[in-house]
Length: 237
Image (cartoon, rainbow, N blue to C red; front, side, top):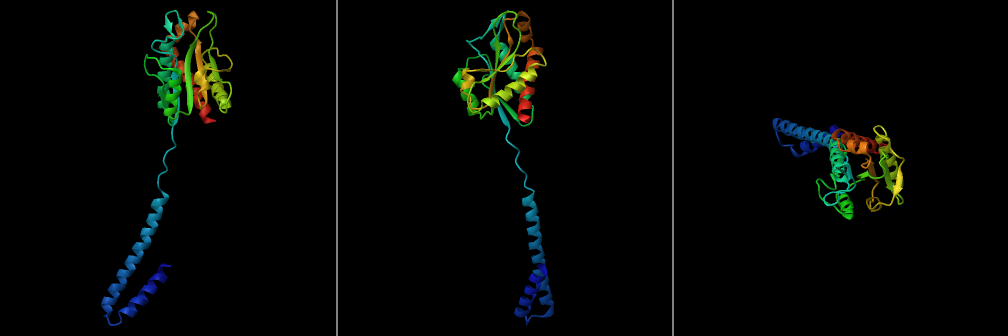
């Protein structure tokens, strides 16, 4: 195609330059040839540049972490340990783990010891565009009870997805403590959520041994890692 274009251009030039001397004719034809090659090279490079436009990275999955209670609402209390303190510590550590993992980003419904209403917690998650909702609590009951329980939504279009998420988190918790089978519940934060949501009761604060464990930084971090592993497994499936 390039040769045809060059020949046509040469003939036209010959016709128009019949009275021009050989030197000027050759100079003019070389100029046309160079411009034709420059045009072809530009098209090639332009096509290569378009084909190598970088693809933007996939949007990170935003995970809402909801440390239960706070402020004027201490939650369950046992042996000097307050639920609101334990849930906040676990929630913050879980947020750190999530934010250090590529493709995930955490948003906390509270970052300090203050009260956040139930409806506001769901609103915070929605405004952030959360794709998962993880609420963290401590249970209360008989002193001999010492296990974790993961609750999921009773009904709705995302109940099955919530059950899968709950199964993976329960499996993670079983590496470090007793964990009850997943249960459904009609808790407000689960019922109002429009994304897969779980409420994790990390242990019984009314059990003397477990209350001591829940108050230690080491055990809080182990619980956060267990929940994080469950989230990872859910997202990888």
